[in-house]
Amino acid sequence: MKDGIYFISVFLEGLASFLSPCVLPLIPAYMTYLTGQSAEAMSRDERARKSLIINSLAFVAGFTIVFVLLGAAATKLGSYLLRHQHSIRRISGILIILFGLFHAGWIPIRFLNYERRLQLRPERKGFLSSLLIGMGFSMGWTPCIGPILTSVLILAANAQTVSRGMLLLAVYAMGLGLPFLALSIGIRYLWKYLKIINRYMGLIKKVSGIILIIIGLMIYFNLFAILAYY
Image 1: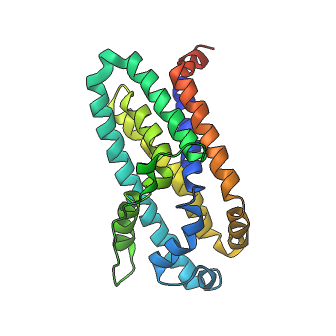
Image 2: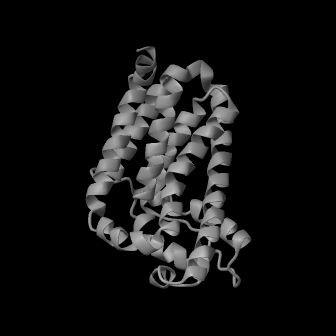
């Protein structure tokens, strides 16, 4: 039961990351980056759509690889800190609450407002180049998904095994990647709705921040364990 709650919350955090201002509004740019064609052109051209789907799979695989490796590293570090797990849990909860307040726009955290992106501009668009682009972009989304990703890494750091920490990050990447793949597959029908969602980006950020705050409170007060008991 406890594992199920963790995985559901991490998956929702992945969805929240997809809706962040450095991912959702830039989806057309990412698609153009992967295929060399505009999103509107891809919504009409069947060959371009097939190329987009293949390259999107590689793109998602690229950032999934990076996140899973981060999960393994976080868990490995966490195994050395088990003797202080109660203090770490409370500190982790406070950090996640702060990240939630930042993500909602209620407090400023200056160092999270900077973005570092690995620039990859291959001349030929293909599966391998899209894989590398996904790995590169995963390192440059810190100003928006940094607080959310950090909360997932904190959960991974408290995981009992490396494989469980890696699985947590894989589930997070699934929450981030599935909407991207769905949009790639159904771009002909979903393109107009993406434009509508962009209008509510401020509200989406606040809701995502509130979700982070709730998760932080649950970690601080050990509510995950209490819910598992019932």
